[in-house]
Length: 593
Image (cartoon, rainbow, N blue to C red; front, side, top):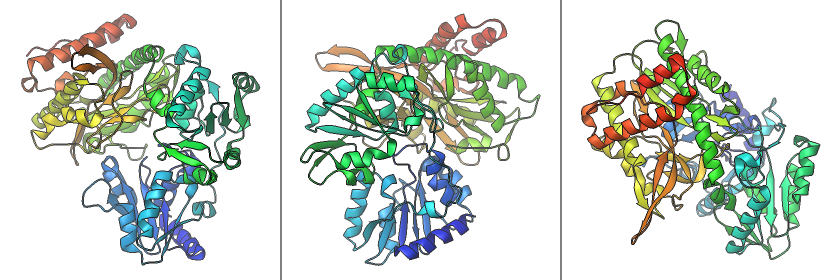
């Protein structure tokens, strides 16, 4: 099937006079998770991971993805004729270098500018033109061979109330306007769906796992325009928005609106989030100013109401996780269960909690060798049966009206081997070290990443993914602009930002281990040397002490773990009774050196 689709695409390429076609694997808003209509990467390649891009020539094809998906991509691309390019490895050429080496001079490379970020378009244009290769907007060629392509999503939009957000849309828009003045631009184009949802205190369900809706927005000092299909809004919500001064226009009318922008005005865009079609609609007489989206910077710092709500969501999630752990311990070895059953159960236990709005991403459940597949996705056919031996890794999260969660635990189902206990303990040491970090303001995530890896590096071990990402407030589970990873990120970690802390180790065809908590950045103290920040852990769920080799932990690390388990007990035990409360007491019992 994949080979047939590639053949049809190549026939179109010949008709259009292009020797290569680049597929960025995104929607017009550069979303991580995609509406079914824009799942082009999966359609043309069969690879279902959430990250990757393709280049297709008349006789070759390649897909790039990162280490999270190397094993999965290798399996899914097998037999398709598409080569796997392991991104971020020094020996792997990037897509432009690959195109240059596989195309003769004067070739034309086709793109769909609506699904290509402006920053990448500029980079590709510059590098390819230097080799006499032209970048050509051909539109969406896949649309011509995708006969049963899904339509645009049409889910309803709802309001996220002030009791959750702690700030009105009017106040948020004013803060965006204040930020806009500092840039020197007259207006900002909002294209990232989570930026728009946050700005207008609205949520939707157009994308699985992201409570957002298809839209664009334009904000200047006089007006705020929201471009969204009107049938997504109830009449009552329309009136509320209009009473707040929001101008409503249809989703597709944004391009015509931009073409009428006042000449010589400055337009602010986020080049990594704004597609080339949007930029090309801006009159050439206007100056374009680039930078991180203003609402992206604002929403990353949660206010007191949001943080209070997140702590409440963590209690709900903690109870759901405890019920799951209790169920898993009771059922394993007595009834047949699979990785798929575990994923379903994680959802069902969260669903019992008030205000639950869905999973924040597709659960990752890896038993034994599957645990080494960092972002594993299994179905009923591919799921392994879980037995009373080995170890199980599960990474999952939920959306609640009062917050978004993301948690990973690795548990023993039998007696763990010495190597497994060593690996787990080194991972735990990294999690504790980052949890305890104290650092001066204006510190970036790359400066802290070493804390989570030091114990692993000491033993010649490492992991290929980042250590931490921002988490949205009932929004995208992966939220910019901050992250904790080796690569340099110019955005410093600031008080109020919520991040994950998730070191791991993956031994191919053996097992994977990861422990993940969410934490909030807080102010620690101000001294003559400046302001210092640190983290408070938010996640409430026991760590499996059966997996720990106690002798590898220092006294301070043991104290941290005991203190953490005491916090979990203090927060959750008043909400529990009977066997579940006794189970929590057992799982949070202090350990001795």
